[in-house]
Image 1 (cartoon, one colour):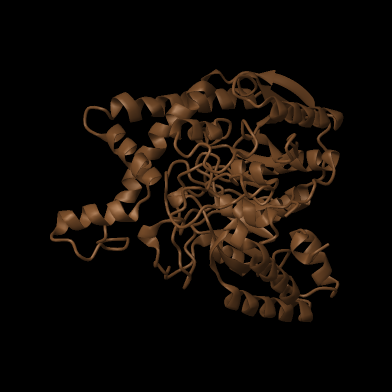
Image 2 (cartoon, rainbow, N blue to C red):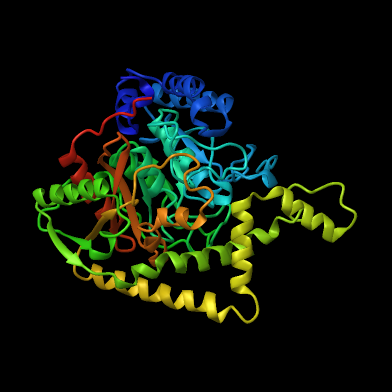
Length: 485
């Protein structure tokens, strides 16, 4: 097995035993990037020189026996939405094409403190707006399982990089499913922690009441290792929770005997690919074999979730993106005849069509006379969705559902039909609206050989339960096939 194909915990054990060095692992990853990334498009910026320096420092620590932990010396890729000191940070947009961050965001700083080797910045839908990673301001990302298919979005570069062996682990952000949906399409594990579990300081904002940082990895154990490293209160982020962070990796026992898994009626029916449904039902049966009880539950307001999301998220985006005007932030159009022309030209040339569409939708929803009719009503529906989720969790430990209604679709298939594209996130959006935690992990291959994901959802701040149920399923499922690239 190639080094880039191994997991974080496997590589860590080999480094501890002196059979591997971080330098060897890092060289293997950059060699793989050189081999395949012209076909995948996962990276926007590589940081090879600083990565090799970090790897040598890690090797020095291992040589003395004072390594920092399981992430020490491991190459990790970052979605290009995280501010990274001295490194270009574009958020997938031309308007930030040449922006060099003067400081590290909190999660980047925490990864570096854990000894992680940062391999570079990963491609994404512009400002995290998209479900396919076709909306990058630079070039689209391709799915390593079939380069004619999308990897999912907006963290498509993060998911594709792991599936293709271009990173050992990665971070992404999830506003409506942007970690879990690409994880499902690329056959990797992706987790959206509870809103407030991970600091968003130094993360470029899309929709502030929905955005959350989370890990993507080859398996559940790696996901737990990454979450442990980045979770916890941050005084620089007033929305981060002052709660104890469990030692997630040590709590992965696979013992789920007697626990209850809820099967929501509303997630199985019209629009769901029959092949996806079959694989997800088999995943539920596998958990039943591990001793869990399957319990039917109902979440009737789920049908309003997509409409609610596409009021709240664009409204918050229109406010957050107002700062990119060529004066405060963003590349300035230099030949404007006046201030208003400069604003118009800067934003017209700097933003792509999907971002403009959502800014216009959001500005309309917040405009005088329409605020109560749209934004205010959407917030009331949000409360209904959250209460129904709470009611369900009074009866079960986790919920089980498909992550996405279909496997990865062909590139260009939905790009001209935004409503069809928005429905790709129909099963992931309710989780963000309710602010709870969820995880996607592979449960099989479709008839045409594409990965399919099953989604597990837990109550807020119960990530250890979520990870342990996922770990139990992973044990029951067995090893997932490697990407054929």
